Amino acid sequence: MSHVVLTTGANAPLGDDVVEIVVSWEGHAGVDVSALLLTADHLVRGDADFVFWNNPATPDGAVRLADGGRMTVVTSAVAADVASLVVVVAADGRTGADTLADVRGLQAVVGEMLYRPDDLTRGQTAAVLVEVYRRADAWKVRAVGQGYASGLAGIATDFGIEVAEEPEDAPTAPEPAVGFAIPDGTAAPSDSTAPAAQPAPVAFAPPAAPAQQQAPGPRFAAPPAAAAPEHTTGFAAPAPAPAPVGFTPPPAIAPPTAPPPAPKPASPVSRALARLRRRPDVPTPPAPAQPAPAPTTTYAPTTSYPAATPYAPAPDVATVGTPSHMTKSPLGAIRLTKSQSVALPWDGDPGMVITATLEWDGGTAYDAFGEADLDLYALFVPRDEAVPPSDKRIPTRGAVYYRNFGSTTAEPYVHLDGDARSPGREVVRITRPDLQGHVLICAYSALGNGSGSFKSYGAKAVVDDGRGSIVTVPLLDDNDSGYWVAITLIDFTRPEGPTVRHVERYSESGEERPMLYADGRFAMGMGPMEFKDGTPTEEWEWELLMDPDVHHDIREGHKLYP
Image 1 (cartoon, rainbow, N blue to C red):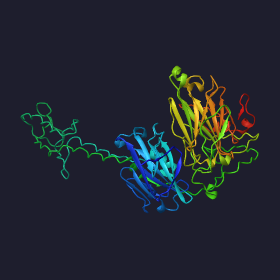
Image 2: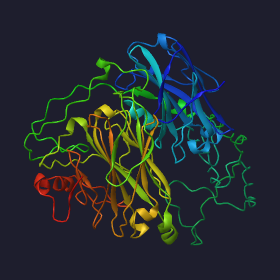
Image 3: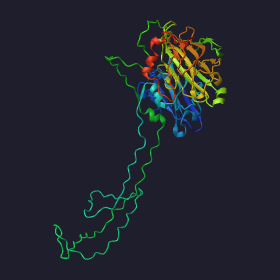
Image 4: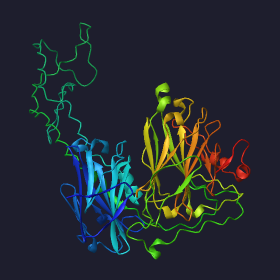
């Protein structure tokens, strides 16, 4: 049977009421398969929403898991408050798969659709493979392929689940007894001393034979309890020798038995999902009397800017409806030239997933220095914080990078798949385009690379909407000193659709990263400076960097783009 092949981010309708899902792989090293049922908020409702080998079916029978990675979903029986189902895979260490990179030929067949994830080779131990979701009165499948280096716990956290602490698997073996043991109920003889404990092996060895007693010689009569009297000879009488006591060895002690073998380790799914609990909804406490601390992810200026008019929100897709198929033709493969831009075709479907990939091969610089460690940064402005271009400088601090991998199922709906430290690629996935404002794709060149052009590393950005539009944004300019480059800006506020713009701007000196503003413009060298081996930027440093007075006029030598 031939299948329709899906690429990452692509979706397709499911026509049948009963959907068969088969996850398969090649070789012995494999995965555990499970599923999570989610509400419209991408949260589980409770324990019954975890389907894995120890809970192979939902109470209503809508989702059933069989052996061999096979799953059946009866869409008409799925509860009304369940909006989607995600199929999760986790590397099964019992089969020799420490990460998903050890699993060959991993794929999922959903009905007539085939999906092979293409980016699970960089240390991810678990992944959301595909999603079956409800759209109006129909069901669709989306190819996700989102890997997690944090394993099932990372997936659980993304879906609003509280993960219990990992218990100890093997009981601690009791300390072996040392020396002789006195049987219960038997008092030790008062006139004898137990032999010294033997520090030898745990296995019992018979005690050494007692030393040969000397034949008793003439004895003095036992003196009274008072002090011994002087004898006529003037010598003190020797202390009386105790009467010999025959030593009776204790009962034979059986060699200690080996501790029972540790139980066979449970599969990763049972070890993690069996202890998951839906994070309880906690009512919002009243605001404290003292000023609240500065947030850690979204900056609120301490000095208010004049009110700015935000962009109008994207249309409510649930109200206007979403067509089953794209109404706009894909762009195909496009390569942008300097300052060129292009709009991705978008029909308003909030399920569209855009991937922005930083690719580099090391180029001539790798030959010269032996290193080529680039880091992908995605600076972002949510749609509800984006404003039209103006003279106001409203800095933002949202960034997804190696210290903050983000999420595709919760704010900011931007997720970095992993950190590559050699020539290769790093991928950012952008979901919920209806909630995005601006995303600036930047790259940082580690100091170990030496000074050199990003162009000499063969670096470029590739933006893919998963629906047949692939936009390559190359680096065209030479630059010998910049450690930062802003490559492309994706503007989600444009009425014609998400617009990919070639921006290519380099830092002039120093290690400070670019700063993205609420209107989609950016400045080089205005953000924090931090290193992988150093400490993150502290909150007081952020306050200084985000001071509106600093950004009212861009510092000399730093221009505002585009």
